[in-house]
Length: 292
Ligand code: A3P
Image 1 (cartoon, rainbow, N blue to C red):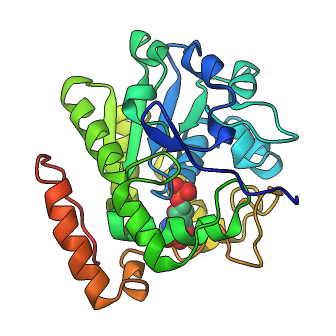
Image 2 (image 1 turned 180 degrees about the vertical axis):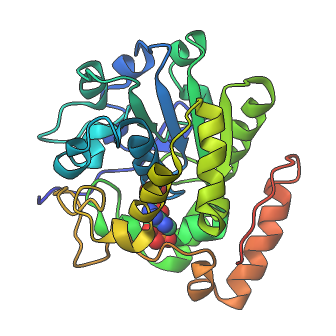
């Protein structure tokens, strides 16, 4: 699809593009159901991976055709999105007949619609270290017409540090969701790095949180299907059917590694970033792993 790149603008204090603000009223007034499961993250933290895992956990046995015939972005609709030729995310979600509804969002915690808190919904937040997040985001923005042009790496990195990214500041996003976890018991906060190091253990923790008990065979099957190489070639999850992305520039399922930031940051950029990071994160107990 040949679309002009959208402008980034300040919207209620966070940077967004019109694709995520055009339907704002409906998003904020969205009516949650008590069994909804929200999959929240800052962009590029592994939301697709987690969505695929949850879809398999809830529906893999019950309706196996679902995974082979419906792209993931229809099975786990994005709450805040509006995109040409697609129904807005809220409409897609209102039309979901299966339950629980699995709902993707990149909204900062303060903009999650009130109804999710009122209904005491289960929320899973996946977080990824800043350096790999910005590296992944850079390549993603190169390849998707839904986001502004990223420009060159050096200015991109500074823009990330200033929080002038689609969905705002990474620092505020990950730490304010972390703070919320201290008071909202139905929030399961997890890390991309843990998911990479021991996917099975993280799935076990998810099952405990969700009250699910898959058989050993089912779990083995899920583990093989959510492996990076498996997902990379699976058209139903790798976004290759979505026409707003240019895979000639970069694949959506790009590297899937911890520490790829080392191929992007210069020594000087790393030093500057670390200094800035220390200051930005000084008031949170949140800790990340940036290496294997
Ligand atoms: P990279 O660009 O570093 O490869 P999101 O879905 O939130 O947009 O996150 C996308 C990132 O998660 C990409 O990171 C993608 O490759 C990675 N990812 C998706 N599925 C994965 C998997 N099964 N294993 C490891 N990484 C995965």
